[in-house]
Image (tube, rainbow, N blue to C red):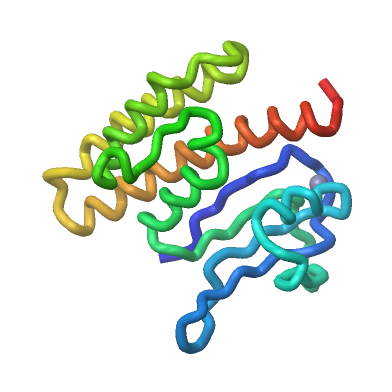
Length: 172
Ligand SMILES: [Zn+2]
C-alpha cells in the first residue's frame, strides 16, 4: 500500500528541506519523509535531528507534507507520541492497543480550548466510531478501516499542530 499522507503545517510555501527517517533494519527502508520550508524547520526539529535532513530535489512539494511509510499500528502510535498525548494524556498502552478505546478516552479528555478543541474532539469521536469496526472485520477490511481512521486522525493532527504553530509564531 502507498504512503499515508499527513499535513503538519498550515503553510503555503514550497518545502526547502526534507527530513528522512530510515529504519535500522537491513536495507534501511524509509519510515517517513517530512517536507518543510526554511521557516518551519523548527517543526522538523521536533521530528528528528538535522542529521537526516537534505535539500528537496525534483518536483515542488508543499511545506508540511509528511509521507508516512510505516504500518498503520506504528502510524497510530506516532499520532499519540507527536500530538495526541500532549493534548489528552490518552495512550494506546493504557487501552491494550485498542484504537477505539484510546480514541474515545482521548475525545473525553479533550475539552480545551473550546474553539479548536471542540473540532478535534469531534474528529476523535468520528475516528473512534470508525475504529469500532476494526474488531470483527476480516483482515483486508481491517487494514482498510485502520487507514480510514488514520486519515481522520491526520485532519485532527493538522488542526492541532496548526493551532500550536499559530501560537508559537504569534499570528492569529
Ligand atoms: Zn512552511
